[in-house]
Length: 175
Image (cartoon, rainbow, N blue to C red; front, side, top):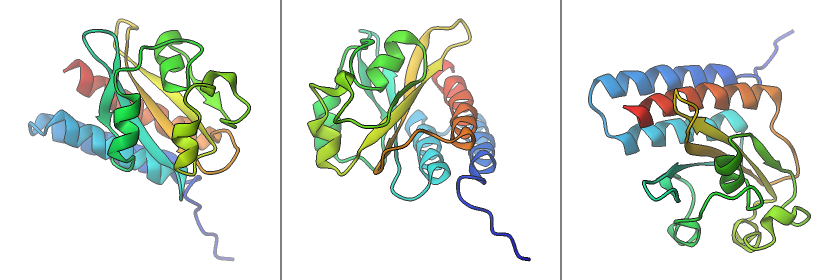
């Protein structure tokens, strides 16, 4: 019997390869944008078709700014630019405020999305989840968000993959 590896089962391997490549790019002096874009793209591959990843960085004013969102349109990024982290707002703003993973399986029914749900839904997204990217001292530096086109939670493999990607992103952002 010929077993095929599904994208989700391969997620940690995809993430580890991107992690290692990101660290190599750091040592070669690649830009932060290029490295974070590599990590976001790997997150999309690890989550399967239709998923879109976004890294939002906490700026010096404590607001979320686009770090790398290679497959989100600029008008969407403009609309969420400079959002203040808050535990009751979306997934990335909530993850940034709480320092905890935040999962929204359905934008329509999650009150955290009442003010913003029209934005991702206009792009065909149904839900999302976000993992905080933390400094070695525990401060939240950024968030790694993944949008889905169906109602679901991230699989254990996706969680592990994003954990690996977040580890590399933290090193890049602390450098």
